[in-house]
Length: 73
Image (cartoon, rainbow, N blue to C red; front, top):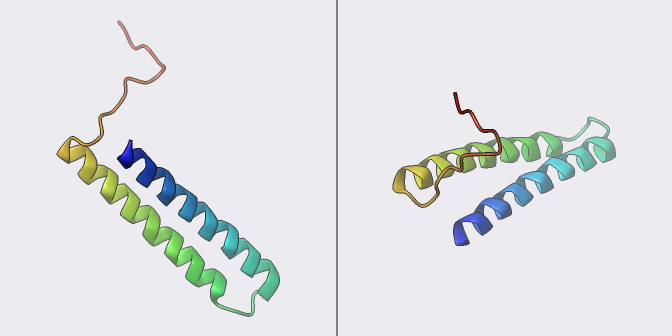
């Protein structure tokens, strides 16, 4: 459950940086670099989350689910 909370927290922070970059895009009207910095943070956090998910899967902390689709032959 702790791992799921960490993943959700990262996703919320990524959404926050996306929203704040949109806000700075509208407020600064393309004159400032705050939007670019927030988008770079978003990309960095997304890459870090993907790497963390890979490590957690490799260590066995998370397990993939079968999903809703049944591929029986």
